[in-house]
Image (cartoon, rainbow, N blue to C red; front, top):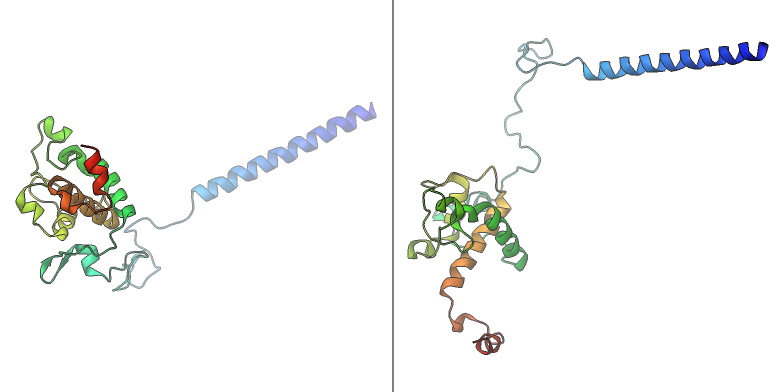
Length: 199
């Protein structure tokens, strides 16, 4: 009988302890969920002007957004759209450009840049082909600028396409243009036999 009573008491103690822990956990969670805080534009006594938040100090730059290279971030210089690519031209850059072009640009421009993408086939305005003389002669900064600010029917893609990817895409556009008008003289001498044997 005493053993059963002790057993029941130990069960009650465990149950009471569990209930207390559960209650304190719920209280802690509720306090974390309902933290004291100021809502946007809510008045407070925190700052002398009565606002709960002040704008950043003039000249503050968010981490990772210091734009010291104007040409890299805008594609233009004092003379206009830049002629030279402001990043090293590498195979990795072109592969990245092809990947992003096929995702972000080919729905309208198609994968060859002729302007006959699937969206166009379904009634959207036809963009100009990258292979017309005007665009073949356009500086590379022009393509970066169009992606950044939009042009004609094309909206801007600055919020969807990172700066580095815009340069990669512009580089790949140049590759597409070159592929349409390259001659055998443009092929490195070591590679020509492979093309000649493929005929």
